[in-house]
Image (cartoon, rainbow, N blue to C red):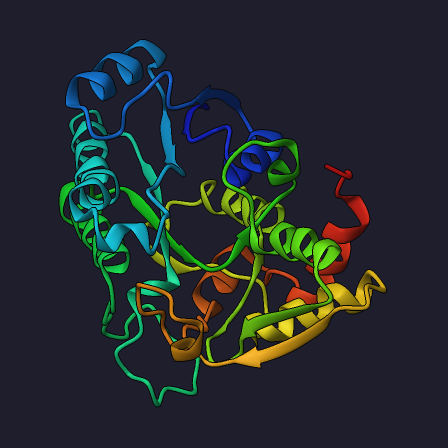
Amino acid sequence: MRIALIGAAGQLGSDLLQVLSGEVVPVTHRDLELASPDSIQTCLTRIEPDLVINTAAYNLVDAAEDDPQTAFSVNALGPRLLARFCEARAIPLVHFSTDYVFGLNADRTSPWRETDCPGPLGVYAASKLAGEQFVQAECRRHFILRTCGLYGIAATRGAGKGNFIETMLRLGSQRKQLRVVNDQHCTPTATLDLARAVNDLVQTEQWGLYHATSSGATTWFGLATEIFRRRNMAVDVQPVSSSDFGAKARRPPYSVLNCDRLATVIGWSLPPWPDALDRYLATRPEP
């Protein structure tokens, strides 16, 4: 199988490049402009893939509030163009979305299922939900995977925009006290584990929408505390509310995802987030 991997230089793309079965053709932003029909047509026609995997996205959550045109161009119209290209050639499309499509129900305490009604709170979240809907409408043979809090080794090599763990390690080496949000419940997810799940999923023809995160749940405060404890760093982590933190875009107060459907199809669940964190900290090269 010949796979066109869009966003191959990012954290998830880098790990997919290592674990996917078949002939993988890495596609970076220099090769393909996601919002350009001509760029998509030229690049993918040249590759002649049997499968297209799109990991590229506009992920600047706060900046999207001031630049909705770019967010929707990349996160919604780009996937629509890919979906149309793939449908016209009967090629399956794998597309990634986000836990941020949920958020309106502030009282939620049970993990969201794929059948639950989304409720995005901001521009970024709305653009990602629109991308999902375009892929569902335009390409019958699709896999859409909602995930959360991705982190991967590529962030330590300058590929991509970093991740929460690397940010905490950097700030923790510079400061003795940090304020971290403690009212956003989610599941940080290792890109290597997600990549392995994707590799198994694309061997099936069980098309549709999936939730795909590490197992368990925490808050960003909880994750930060565990990072510093595992690295024996003396950092005083102070829990704060989202309103106190003052980010421009609203975040979901509870966006833990139920991943039972994925586990049933591929035969296994992604490991618990503390285990994934241990592996990441043990294998990450020092930047």
